[in-house]
Image (cartoon, rainbow, N blue to C red; front, side, top):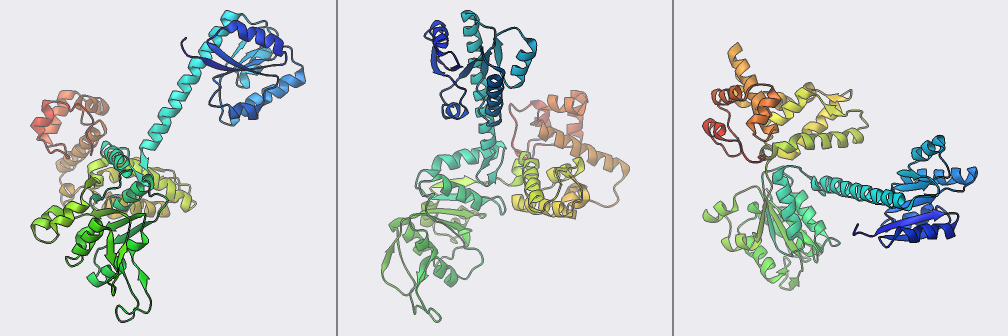
Length: 476
């Protein structure tokens, strides 16, 4: 092996241990100790690859003590493989050592070739465990960016872009429908940035009089208007050296847009009732659910301000565009509210899960959160059923929600929903979907055509669906 294996050799007879260590060769770096010291081993966690433990000769009391320490190593989450050298061929003693967490055992005196191979096997095992732990940690971290959660491809792209631009002190425009989590993304960008230790100040411009917005953003001096009995610091000044987040920037009045543009260009502003320029060092993040470019063309938003705030744009997809995340988010909310309400609710029934996955969610993640909160509050047992969901979330899709359906129409609607859901779960791969439904692929093709099923994110025709399987899973 090319790698150097780091071995902690614990033995009562250090002279003999060093003879064995020297015989192992240059591929092994060995540290010796007379005791199995849990604290010392934990301190060397990054260095130790394998622990070699010589229990020959050892009195029963010493043996018991070292075995207990082996067990404590495992309980403390530090789990290097332990190879134990035993004094004889006592099978009961060997089993006892293995039960306490030994990776392997060798007889005394150890055969050097056999010992070398055992250490190499243990090292490879240790490396495999480390790699698995790292992979699992990456998988866990990849499903969320602070409070923002999503495992779909669309959200992974959002997370990657946010992490890339967070360290760059530039303006960011976050677009997306109401309830998609735009403020959560803004907070995540701030927490990933060099300004994380400084203030994050959020303000929504929606449905407020222009004079009130101006006072909130820029502040005022004493006597600036009737009732201004003292000077007041605005949101921009409060976010100095930090981040300001202006939500629904599309609702900012045309009269205030030049003043905001000056802040972004010159990093100064003036309080109401004052001619003194106040310098401010801030990063600005913006969000909107409106099409600002259309507003520019309609003369409702300044073009120079649009390009100033839209240095980088991040679009948060609606829940309809990332259906893969619905069940994931629903379970997250269920666990949170069950703990908050001290409920034993643990799962959704199959019918309830299907209802959540098929609903269109016009209010996006915020609406899903509220629906799950209500369901957990109403649930009595461990399972959320469809009757715990509000009526809008458990009704059929709009095209099927008509009165006077015939038997054939009901069957057709059921087939369409079943096939559509299976195609989504299988990434629109028809061969895999056919296996999941336990039907022939040719029959599935005919059903797709007859039921006029198409991919909702790209909108191809049934003929295009039948032509070829997509190369990878599509985001819904």
